[in-house]
Length: 111
Image (tube, rainbow, N blue to C red; front, side, top):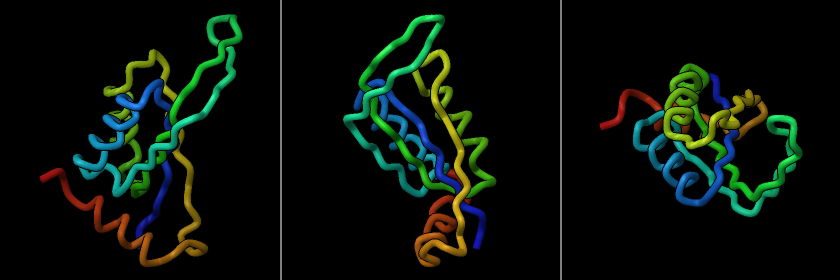
């Protein structure tokens, strides 16, 4: 069983979120990517408090693919400073068949 991580990202709109998700799965950088709409974000940016609607993208991948996934997502993302966070997964406390599936789906390069 390989190390698995979740990569949490935000996107400004559905087209961006779905484009990120599809590109990462097509490139075998992620086994799966969930797109969750309806998030509201409040944050400080360049000295001002901002509030925006965003979507969440959660990609499931192997730890050794996380840096390549991050780089691909950053290159595809329209934001100056995109939110891309890698979160470790406790494989021992997770469903082993699902962990194995993630490992299999992220083997090799895109076809």
